[in-house]
Image 1 (cartoon, rainbow, N blue to C red):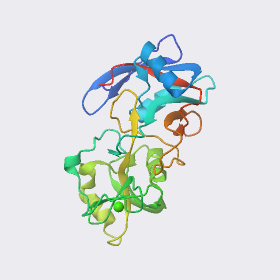
Image 2 (image 1 turned 60 degrees about the vertical axis):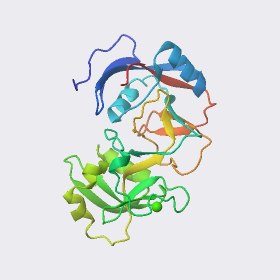
Image 3 (image 1 turned 90 degrees about the horizontal axis):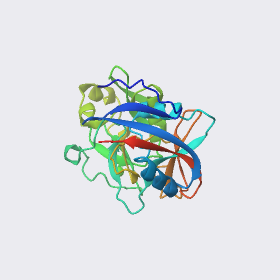
Image 4 (image 1 turned 180 degrees about the vertical axis):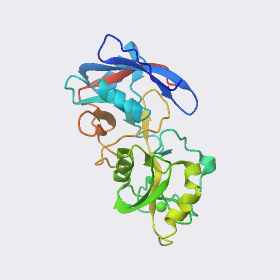
Length: 263
Ligand SMILES: [Ca+2]
């Protein structure tokens, strides 16, 4: 059940696809709505006429969003918003993996937001975890397409490091299983005891409109995961690189709805 449905509907902006999550497979369809609405109006429109504003679960979804943008549209609201009064939740960068509080390996005293908010994850060569500012450029652990792990000894901020991995169709090392791999130990053996190494762990208050917990985020390299923002709604930007940015929710923009069950 992993292959994508090839049936294209008559409407250019609609298509079917199968989404695989770690739990099950579900069928849904994106609709690009070329009317300018603010985020809340767009959400209301999608809930009345479809299921909800679009939830994007992985890079495959992203590619399909790009396909429906044909017609010169530049950007569109998706269903991600910043829950100001929410609590920050930890997620893995690799969208197939669910963060599990019972499987953490924090160093003593971590996570501690020591320098203010520390919303990104690191390990030391001890393989213990810590939190660090996402804007702090560090070495990072990259998983290549043959599932080997590499320590990239080039300092990047967390989002830059994630982009580096995703440009190569992989991701930052994610999940307890990957982090316990023998190879990780070997790769990190050459660094000092105090060297911070970024991993695919981050925490934030962004939520999907439909209430689903998917961790996939595809922010531009300029995105700042540290402050409380003015721009508390997410939009996808078509064109170079196709990444997301956060915008003021009152802006009137086209938007993307979906139909179907996500769970
Ligand atoms: Ca810390």
